Image 1 (cartoon, helix red, strand yellow):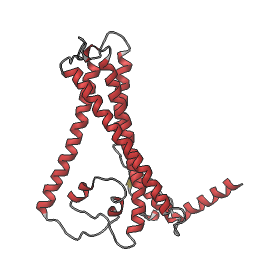
Image 2 (cartoon, rainbow, N blue to C red):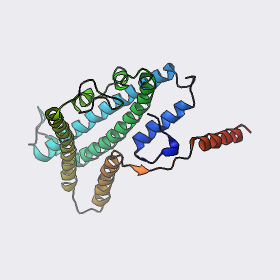
Image 3 (tube, rainbow, N blue to C red):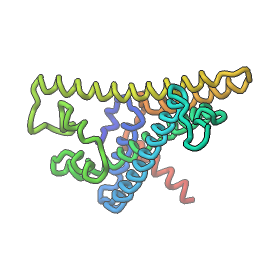
Image 4 (tube, helix red, strand yellow):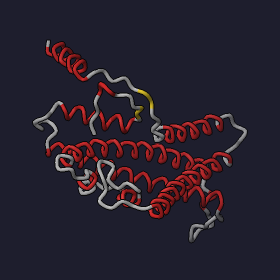
Length: 257
């Protein structure tokens, strides 16, 4: 993915901006002395670590939500051998509400981080594959875990060139609907999490003033996590490539003094 900066008029989100920036940085290394296969392998290793952290935080959110749901909507399960239930644990609802909120925030950050590493890896694949007219996704999918079913379901499988097999209207309509249902399903999971946490906050209402900063902190955590994953597009200014190269040259001269 490259860009003619002299004709640049597009609005960008953070992910696309990162992709285009990496593409421009690669243009400064035509002999591939910096952006080497070794560096490519390092980015793949970092993306795998980001994916590992993402999976761990998903489990944290799921476990915290399940525990909170049992406290809010389930019966008071007794611990075998003693007459003591999970609902008898002091401040259990508040603790699990905070835990679920914290895990959700870390999950949102981990997801964005994983997607940013994937954006950089994609640019390596694009540089290699497009020389032969090959779809870069098939290089990326061989090195990092991806949701390849999305590529298989969408109408245009190759977004960099022409498809070998052009789908007809019925295929487009059906699998577009499937992808919409997948998106709605994930949104419903998010809604369930927010409802469970919201009920946890509501059940924590007390006469003490500490409830208000507690509720405010939980709300802030969720607003932050959701906002950083929206990826809204904004307009950017892109100076001509010659002007940018001159600016960088002057910056390099000042740093060497």
